[in-house]
Amino acid sequence: MSESGAIVTARGVVKTFEQGRVRAVDGVDLEVRSGEFVAIVGPSGCGKSTLLNLLGALDEPDDGTLLVGGHDLRSHRDLDHVRAIDVGLVFQLDNLLPTLSALENVEVPMVGVVRSARTRRERALELLGEVGMADRAGSRPPALSGGERQRVAIARALANEPSLLLADEPTGRLDSRTGARVLDLLDRIRSERGMTLVVVSHDPRVAARADRVVSMLDGRIVPT
Image (cartoon, rainbow, N blue to C red; front, side, top):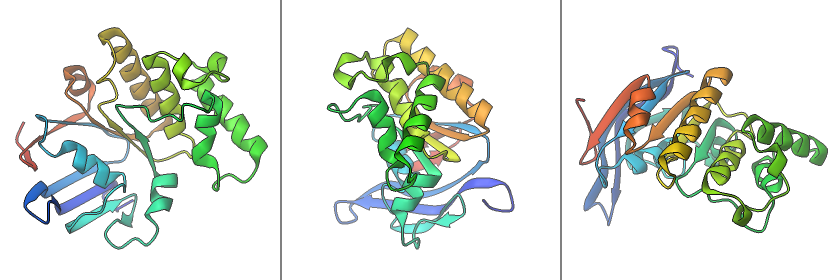
């Protein structure tokens, strides 16, 4: 983390596609302080999900400076480590492995990080309890509702105790009541754990709950 208390620092970050013809993220400057809840909003195609992927070390910027948890993501040699340890990721599609139980899905990110199988299982059970899914630990994703799958996905994102939790449209495929419960859960976890939460969303309830709203248009951050 930087001396300013920022867990994310972006300066002039650029990400292009189609051999540079499309500037999905176009010179973004952004700072997110430790413990903040930041909502990134904007129309479809504005670059907000691409920016989130950059913050989550799922992709690398083409230009600019991007520091996440003190790591320079343009020069860091082991982005897998950043994804495994420093950042937790929650997606609109829960991306759970359908042939594994809820418990096993939560254990997956800990393989190679937590050596003891017993410790992995105990921690996975604890996290499922934290998101209200302990009683469904043995169920596979096809047997779970959309809200239940998203809760398991949140537990999985917390598996290695990241300092930064990133969520891309976590309520996008849920009905309003279930979406509100998932949002309540994310905000509660953020508060209780002192985590930093960055959420990309079209949901106005996300913006209403956030400490700060960042608006994007055509790959750039614009005044709200």
